[in-house]
Image 1 (spheres, helix red, strand yellow):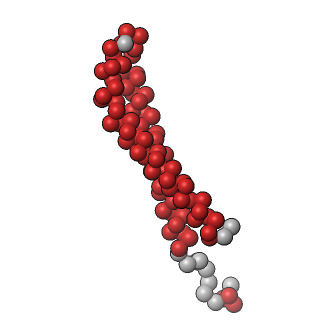
Image 2 (cartoon, helix red, strand yellow):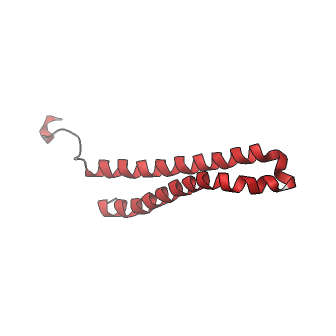
Image 3 (cartoon, helix red, strand yellow):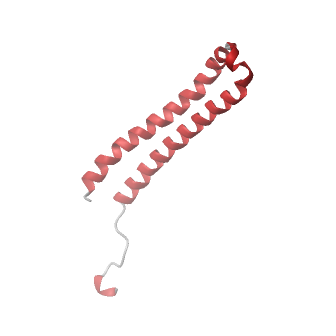
Length: 93
């Protein structure tokens, strides 16, 4: 695989990682605003703690996935830019 095709495929992965991270942060911002509305519904009134837990878990998973994608992008770009490791003289091996 040549260098250009690898970098062109990893840019969408970086964008996807940033989108996941932002979505996870958005979940954390929205939970305090939405939970009082959910608690007003009779059906969910007794289960607000499990709903809150699930929302926070979704947020953590989204943030974790986004950070993993972003870290993978930067690891791949560092390994692509570093010189190949090995003996400097081909006759040494």
